[in-house]
Amino acid sequence: METAMPELSRDPLQFPETIVSDRSMAENLTGNWRSLRPVIDAARCTGCLICWKFCPEACVKLTDKVPLIDLAYCKGCGICVRECPPKAMSQQGEAGL
Image (cartoon, rainbow, N blue to C red; front, side):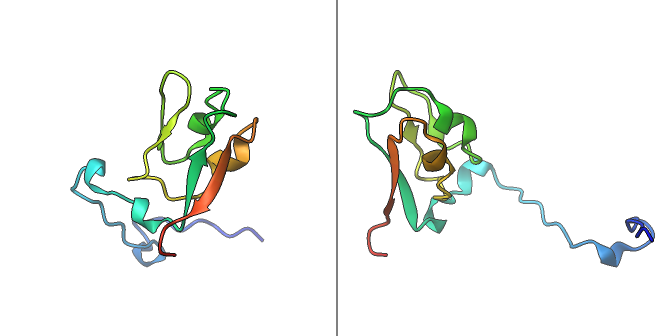
């Protein structure tokens, strides 16, 4: 027996209320959610930019060789660290935690 998806016009209580922010994403600094921060070892970094490609929050900024992590927006998920082919990235605890 298949369950049909509820239609919003027929059953609005089946859907959570969505709140849309009227503020720019530049104001929504989310880096303070993080307990671990990514750190790049410049000597090991090959500049492959896999960290940039996989970052779900677009926190990796491109440079000539070693990318920079925008910690104002980085949530510390560690995807960049896990995907780094030369293992040039690690995660360190935030100060005071």
